Length: 563
Image (cartoon, rainbow, N blue to C red; front, side, top):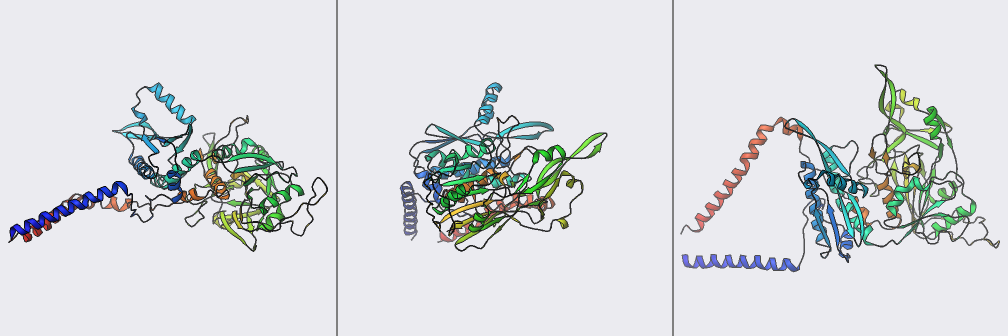
């Protein structure tokens, strides 16, 4: 009887071994991973997988996040490695990466040269203050990567800083954008430029240097050109998307007609319009100025498409902080940062459209509100809006820094969620339908297309969203969204890039940016109040679990071989 049991046990063992061997053999030929996380945090989007599978040359990634790291940065490194490991499996062996520890370089001069080279290439670092055995020290942690592909190179900054967010949230937000951070750069290096983007000029639009940072980013993915319409019907023929950024004068009937017909043929448009003129030079020099409403001869056209821009200004308690002298201390001016109500900070929420989801706050300046108009066949989605503590100032409007001398009460800001940016999608009607249209050079009237193909437009009631700071000598420009007072970079650039990608039809990768991970933080207060019981449980529970499992196994074994 015992002999038969031994034979049966041996047979079962052999079967288990054969199954294990078979699974390993199949695993070498059949690849399949199962993501058990609720939010599919370890699953790549289809667009990312497709792009990786089409790599036809070696793509090499150098990540400068290594060495002795604080716990939060170590977590970011681990998550970065895991997402890259996942990407490698879909790249047919064409994606290779390595982590580089710059702290291993002992030659200070060489290390300084490396730092300067990385800064020039667009990487960023974090300067950490550490306290070890009562001694303060600084540690530089690089949180970026360089990607090389076919003699082209591009930087990736992995850490996504957010003003006012605690370190755990910053790390979590950086982790949830890892796929987008890498996949978007891979995409820009991998594919040749395809679509033309036209930046309209000739009506006092923003100058080259004022949008230089955005153009440098778009140049990696598109052919970007400034285009002066000048009444030429074919001026926009090659373009997929046009940008109308901050004009200060009216559009001629001919230029207006050409833009309208461009949209009727399926062209896409990003409008950034300042409906109120504010002379900021006068404001800085005298601490006060006037806000004057203006028109660009576009109101009827935008109204026909489904939106109306209002000639007013929004004041918001959630606003960009600016330094103000609020008094004197010991004979010296006392300076404080106060919210400048005319520069609302626009923050998306979890229910927002994927174009703004997970985007850092967007800074604005002298922004108006807009209304959406009911138009058949056009879907309207509000992308940007003020906070729940805002109000409207009509024009003519007197603008003065003195408004900050009196503390504001939320009771004075009773308007909430005022629309500032809207996405329009659908089939639009031409504003020139049943109207007299301009004539061509031969005196013949142009043929009008009354209804558009399906297309998209985005209208933003503030041109400063796309404007970067320019140095006084006009030779250097700051990052789009950079604020000189707080030394913080807001989410303007990411938002505008999302808008352009979506208008051009390259929206697949934006879904990777919109992925959200639940941050499951420990209850710090509860841990502090119950530290001793928690330590005891953490020490004893694993031992009890092992003893229980061992006892169960021993009991089963005794019953099996009792006879």
